[in-house]
Image (cartoon, helix red, strand yellow):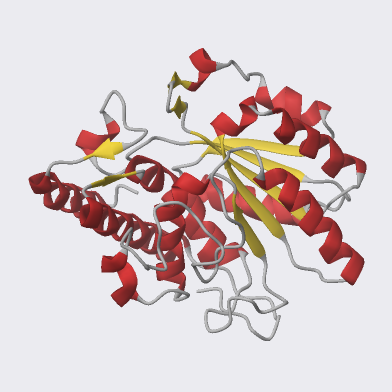
Length: 290
């Protein structure tokens, strides 16, 4: 795990270890989903590889002190992905596993949408999409002004590319040469209203982000080696400009019957299906299908 209260650089996590972290993040998400019987579980399964690399390789954090000034900041702009981030925070040791069963309950520190005032390690309250990148720009500017070398990672959905505020923030980040800002975009191609391309076409994304002055990569977000390489490349760019990684992901990754559901933006799963999902996920992991 990347636990570095001293601010030193951690050794890289082997790929097999990252696969283990990603599997556990998916398991935590499924277990929380079972508590409520529903939720944004498909996104959590698809985004788990990115979260594993972020929290278990790239980021510097102190699980015992989530507000440590030297920490890297992870903004969950798509606040409905809270279950995914809680799973990563559980794996990173920021949240204790005995809190898992409180997911979505009254007075829980794990509400169904991300709220910074409730959850340790949650840097912003998400809800209305398209806000995170603008917050990230301000945060990255502030850190630079204070001489703090911490990174700002903005995790966002492809639906947020429909928001004008996202592109205003993208333009501002390039103008201010924010080399400490990395946007992570989940291209799962689904929104609440349907296929992302049918709601509002946003391609060609690589060309658009490049035109806005960003360093751009596009990779398979469920290929751990590709995800790892993309993070390392983004953090090694010498130029003072923002970086974006576009991740093509599969909703429900690791659970066959969830991967193939026609609509799994918000999943309602029958009680008997939760154990079937865990069994399928474990079988994939045991077979080395990551």
